[in-house]
Image (tube, rainbow, N blue to C red; front, side):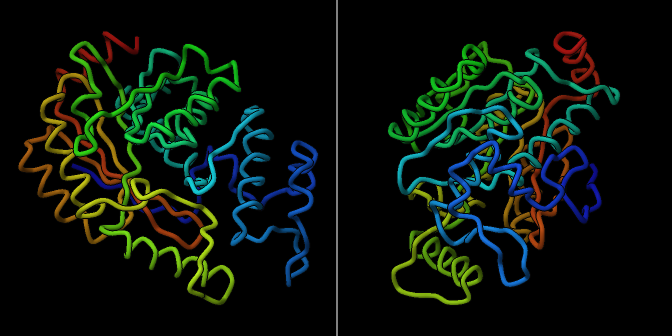
Length: 316
C-alpha cells in the first residue's frame, strides 16, 4: 500500500501551471475579451463569480490548448475548472505508467470509463485530446447526456473514440453500465460531494462569498451544477462506498478503479471499505490546485501476476 506525498503545484505535465495568458486566449477565442479586465493588482483577469465569464474562459482554454473548437453546456449545468480536471487525468496517466514499468500507457489501447460524465463531458474530451484514450461516459440525466453528445458531434475528432451510456438506475454506479465483455484500464469518477440540496447551496454560497467578498440570498453559481452533480443521499462518502461495493462484481473487468475524494476526513472510512472489499492494492494520490488540497483514491483487485497478464494482453 502506498501514498504519494502532496505536491505544491499542478502536475508537471499540466499545461495550466502558469497564470492565464489572456491576450493569447483572446486570440484563440475573441468572445472572451469582453469579460477580461485589469484587477485591483493591475493583472488581467475575469470575474470568477460570473458564470458567463467562466464559461467563455473554458471555451478559450479548450480551443487554445486542446483544439476543441466547439463546447457548450445547458444553463445551470456544471461548468468545470479545466486545470483541475486536466490534473486528475495527468495523475491517472502516471498511475498507469507505474503499473506499466514506467512506460506511458497512451493511445487507443487504453479504455476509460467515466462515471457521471455530465453535460460538459470534460474528462473524455480532455483525456482523448491529451492521451488519445478511448472513453465510455455514463450519466443518469438524459438531458445532460444529450448535451454531452452534442459536444461530441460538434467536434469530429472524437467520433468513434468517445461513446455514452445512460444509467437507467440512479442508485447504481457501475452496475448497469459495465457489460460482461467490457474491459477498462481505468474507471474515473468525480462524485457529488454534498449530502443534501441545502448543504450544496450553503457550499456554493460560501464559494461566491469568497470570490466576491459578499454573500446574499439569491446566489448565482459561477460553476453551476444540477442536483445530481452536486449532491446525493449520504454525499460523496456514501457514493464512493457504494462504488467500492459494486466494484467487487467487476474486479476482472477493470485494472484501476478511482474516484476523487474532496473531503480528507472521508479517507479513513474509504480505506476501511477497501480493506473489507479485499482489494489487492490501493493508493491515495494527493493533488494541490492553488490553495485547495484534493486527492483521489485508487484500488485494484488484480494481484501482481494478474497485473502482468493484463499488461501483456493489453499494453504491449
